[in-house]
Picture 1: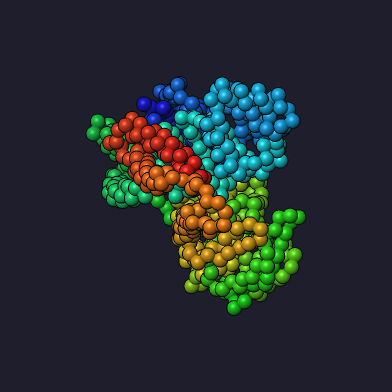
Picture 2: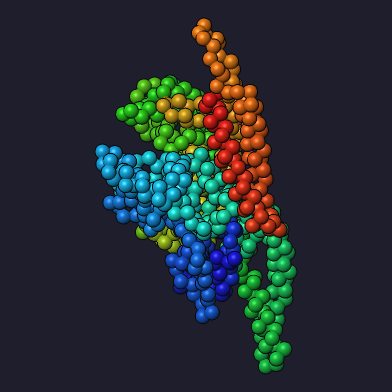
Length: 621
């Protein structure tokens, strides 16, 4: 079943054509991601697909299947500022959602016992308790706790999480998501991955999170040169297929250029379009000229700035502590940075990661202890809060305000124009005003101004937000060879894995642990640690308690019940394994989706029953 159909859709702004005569479909069960360079029409295409903008073209067709429930997550959520979180989350016009909202409101004011009883009765009538449990899980996982807070008192990231919670609670069949992982910490992202893998969900999204693309998507479409290319499979398969396609295109382009040179010489001799043959050849020349003028979209961003020398003393944090009222950010933290260190900073939102950076760079002072910064240290600090580009300046003026020439290795220099070319700003963009740039282009320009300052201690606070995947790949290549110190705060697990050697893990209450390894290694360690902890707790539960001199009591579990408990554990493990296998089969285009969905429902029902019985017996034990 096709949920969405686009036929012969075009879109342009002035003389700039973003795409022309595009055809595209979204079918039930597909999980599609859109990737493209910033500024090439990605956001526009997303708005056309979501129905916000009308497509252009005389024969253009936009068809959305009427009998499905669709929800859209925008980058910038739109709420009434005076709404409470409760009002925003339960905005959906559904009897069940309204009943849960009334129940949650009654729970906030328990003195209104009559309203609480009425709400509970309505919940019973609508059989809404299961849905209420699911809703609470969503709010808990997204760390939305204060339901009475006003929307205008929330940060942009908190509002984005409220918008995501609202969308998931609406329980749509078709989701359109614009950067769903922005402003989520890693635990939230990994939970959302599992949630969106559900086979009954159909998804079209824009995201730069490559692990998300790898684990959730079964189709990737790329907007390149005004054409939409479709690749079946996840991110790894997309990279492989795209590489093969570009190789073929490059070979074709070489042949086209040779033919163009030959035909250009003929055209310069001034042929007269009198005969049918001459007219046809001139027409073919024009088509060849169009192809040659379209550069292959595999430009590489090469950055090889010269880095200032770094002395023996870099940055030393000597037993520093910092608190804000009851929030303890650091407690007696001690560390000395060494040359060439690559450190990632991880931890949930609100534990003080950005404050930690400000302490290291001397922007704020610790309550106790001391931060010593070496004389040769030149910080380059990228943070989204620091983007203060003047809207009335052109792109080239922003760069020239920093420097006309940039020193490179081996005594070479780079002009401002050459620098912008390397940073994937086409010549026609150099005179564009900052106010006309997309969010991703502004971030790319700001990042460029940071790198131009010749830092030897580079600090990147969420550098990947709104950068396209192509820019991220090249930025990673540059940072991989960056000789100075590197400190990264990011929720982009792929970015972190490629660049860091060890992690500062913020656990809260001022506790910071140094973990030797990348982020994936840390997550594996956490999983093993929690698994071992559960084993020990279960062993403690099953261990015979020391006998106390008192009349013997009958054991709580009979022999048969003990056997049942052991068997339940084995059954649950087998069911969980089979559930993972079935979920994996949904990526197989030849699989029977109806049979798989039925089996998955049966597995889940059996799991729920067995887990409930296991909890009863375990509690008795």
